[in-house]
Image (cartoon, rainbow, N blue to C red; front, side):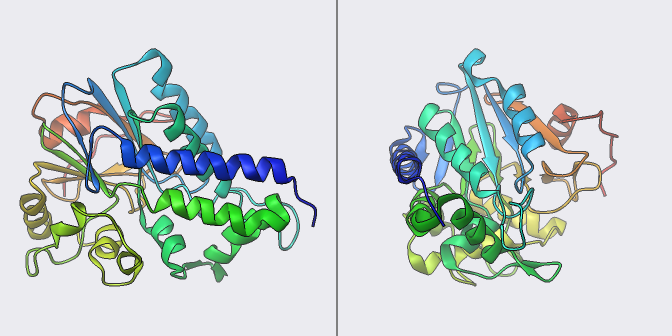
Length: 298
């Protein structure tokens, strides 16, 4: 397969700049981005995208960062999903959206934040994920190779270098804590919050590490959410990770879950300074394509 070495080299260099921007971000504290009123007026939160180009482009247009200089944008989980290259072995095109996120980090180094999520962690740790009997990791690599040919492995290494520097969470002074998910059973075994304060290592990419538990958990019990919120110093927890039939859900009094990939995709724009209740957050959620129904909390 032929490859355009110049384009590949440009992508590699851009990913390196994005990784450096992650590390140099002025609001970064360990693996958490800490936002206060000095740095931002509002925060737009987007959940799982999984290669959905239509939703991604529309969300960027809504964010309109150039015309909202005090707005921050948080995105997560773009890998694995969406359109594929033609042919039997064409592979997944979602790697191009990961490049877009790295590019956004270079263009808005202080105002764009890409959270490490379970599908990106799976790429870092070669953790296999399958769906409909298809190995998503292999499809992702096939897509990279389809695009970059002989430079595919070098480009993928650059992606991983960027991902390895991405934060695990964002917290505002108003008590909102955003992470891809939350660990299971925090009410029985406290979460190791030390992972939020130090650089990640290869050990953090493995099953049962604190980072793995943070991005893979699906324990939405009220007791678990209460315990996790207390352990990370939060009032409201906002996550992705869980598909939502109507774009969002509120499984307990602490959590709000957003879905950015489905046809009823949702997002939220929150003020950074004022204290917010869960109802305040829910009332600010908007449908990307159509108005969303109001849900009563279960």
